[in-house]
Image (cartoon, rainbow, N blue to C red; front, side, top):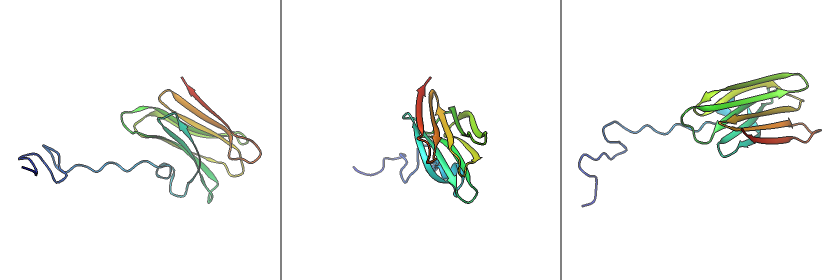
Length: 142
């Protein structure tokens, strides 16, 4: 006989409980930094996630966030941004389940260096988003 088995849930419910909770929405750079921040660059952190560089043209600020591909148990994570011309920097690090950040700096008209890490994979992008210099990307497993 086809159909639900007796006592076997159905209708979107799991055994022994109420309705299943919908999966959490995916974390986005705009969810971390704010809707006015548009993604202008990104770098993969191996297969674990991505560091995003965003920019808000209304206030001239950049924001960085490191976002995991598969949220779960807390792992060591970091994100940072640095403006060499002004010596301004911001960042975040700790044990996180889905993302590190945000980190904000005023970057309008300046080259920025930025990056982050998830577990033992570290990435950095130097001299980024400026016309005069070619950016340099580095990935390191420690």
